[in-house]
Image (cartoon, rainbow, N blue to C red):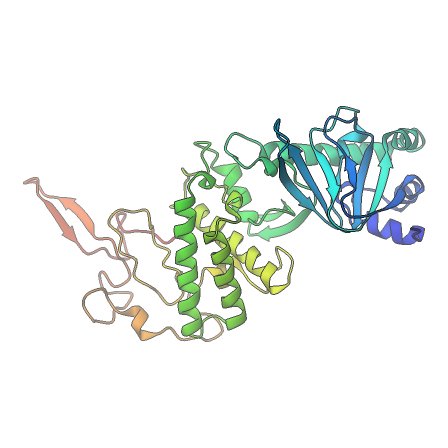
Length: 379
């Protein structure tokens, strides 16, 4: 297959490894790129064979797999357009630890280590930029292979990223990750026990069931459009069927009253829903972790032993957006049939305060919004 050099240059400009290269450096790189066509089932490289080339997928799909001592094949990852494999070949000839095979008819671009070495002699800055990117990719993969991650496929991320933004700024999130920027920050801030949510499938299922129920209720109350709501319900069903558990990665012990756990679930569900809606991960204007997945979810401290979640208009401190009015039923006090207000004790808090009298007896009084450190805070 032949491709116009300008087309190749435009394609390479979208690859993670080459994002730092200027136009002149990309032009030089295009000169050493080889384009090959492969039918389905073609081995690109095999386990224990020397690493000789960097492979970039222009079209098709490639699976990365490993064979057990008994010959059983275990798929580790699936790569598609814009993904790359074997980038370590540009650094050394250490043998491949896995094998790669095309699943569909594929167009593959490749750069050999010999050609790259010759190119770096002509343009040292090109080598410096590319090797810096390769080091970042390897570092990111190594972080994913810490003792807390049980899924062996986690280390075989493609190296592509997407940019996400929060109040603290912008961060690059791995393209394969279904979690987002708030989960990424939690991984950095709460690396406490080394035991992640991934180990507790029952808890992951419970989170998915709560989010599914909330989505169904919100569609009934016209707080969530049916296409988005159905996608969220479908995403929760995927999780209940055992998929995507490896993306629940926050530490079981964390600060912030469970905020990170909740946001990990919200981000994973939102990005799965985006996939069902036909969008890319991170396109949150179509399905947002907070504005859609988190709508109407009872997000009080669900792990607090004395809490009884009482639904609120949107499950947060904020009023419903877009002029939506909360359903009066959602403001009904538990067990009283009375409609509460912000100033009424107990109307917006579900955990009673316990105090100990001088006589040693425990007294339970309703929690209030002001000056009550014992009430359950919103996640």
